[in-house]
Length: 346
Image 1: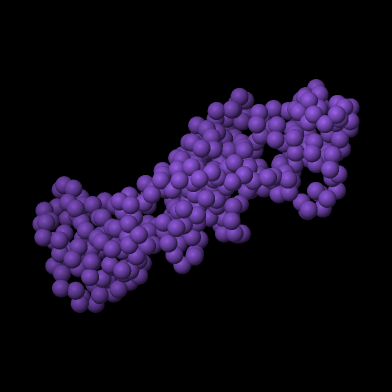
Image 2 (image 1 turned 45 degrees about the vertical axis):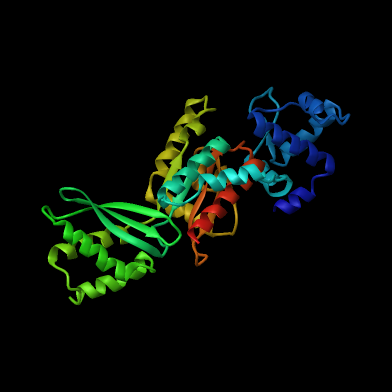
């Protein structure tokens, strides 16, 4: 549909429409024919521009927010602009190096890397950053248990790629330190070089068959550690929500954005975001009503999936912002960050 629509616009209409959208993404305000004539600097009169704007409005690409105001693009107009007229910029070497550095994984947990990446995207884009994070699927290099105090221990898992994951488990009171060491030694023989899911099946089958020579307390540590990890599903992380509220002036807009945040906190949102990312390769752009998750808030989302070493999509990262976000700058930023995260997982 985008192709035929663009083809139906002559060169003058395309140029005027492009300038209207670019002005809107820069300021968030409507632009009138006189201002547009000065911006174009092509000798077109305001009257000529008004006629073209009227045609674009009739085609459903523009609308007037107020009776005497200029014009702004509709959601359909923004979609047309993004799909057919947008000139996507490229990241500079410095920007790529900055993203690489902020996402460096050595000695850090996957959760902290993803949180840093999300916070970084929020700051660079002036939107809210989001990530759908997977459970740990990398092959393991090291596992140990660290006692935190009575009844609690820290499970430390280090993947072959250097990512670190930490989770807290409950222990029977009075458990000796030797049981933690024995549990770590037992699991190291069976988990190292495998993913958690792969190793868990072997370990649980062995425990069920009573072939493992473990005392009851050590067995509880093993089972508690594995249960904690096997039950870890994906989660949704959102950072920089205040960025979305910066330009909100009307209470109705504020309520819509609050409703969006409430929806993002549900498990269903995680699944829907990941499903949306899996439907096509590369960066996905959702403008307003194109995705029910964002339609109520009048927001747009730019989301890119990332894959594990088996090239299976396991998560997604991106930003949510006003429909007037700077698409040309943010799209390559999200795309590159997703590729960096994918390389870390691979």
